[in-house]
Amino acid sequence: MKRLFDFFVSLSLIVVLSPVLLVTAVLIAVFLGRPVLFMQRRPGLHGKPFYVYKFRSMTEARDEQGVLLSDEKRLTPFGQFIRKASLDELPQLFNVVKGELSLVGPRPLLEEYLPLYTEEQARRHDVRPGITGLAQVNGRNTISWEDKFALDVSYVDSQSFRLDLKILWLTFVKVLKKEGVNKDGHATTERFTGSDRSHRERAARESH
Image (cartoon, rainbow, N blue to C red; front, side, top):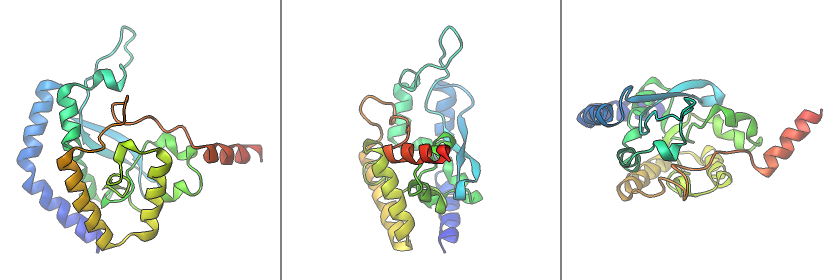
């Protein structure tokens, strides 16, 4: 039922929001350049990798050595607007249609984080990742990584159609209020470098 709901709702949203998708793509091409889409490999269900689609929100500005500048320096006011309005997330509806994402589930994070999770935190990959999730409606980028992962695992253990509908409604409210988009001092949030427990578990594995 969840997969059927995801498929038909995301397909309907793509049709209804097609003018918004088109206008956003044109504006990005004008203000940020091409390509308008940002694609990055992320771990999906059971850690299987896939390419997530997002609208670009940053420039390709580089220093004298050709190295990309920090996110804060590449994020323009237009890019900030795209993020606050969550327009950058809309292309992920195509990931949902393809079955790589769900509308609701733990957010797909960077592959480099995989070895940093504790065994408990890694359980977030026991379900298909989502465009929004329990962590996104309970602070999004303003809460700690440990709190995010705890909420992700809580969703894995308590997922239901009713909970999904509640999270979707709360997400709609959060988007309207533009809450939790970034953490103070960061374009979004700081990188995850592992919790104290994950460091201990990794050290124990390496010692054997």
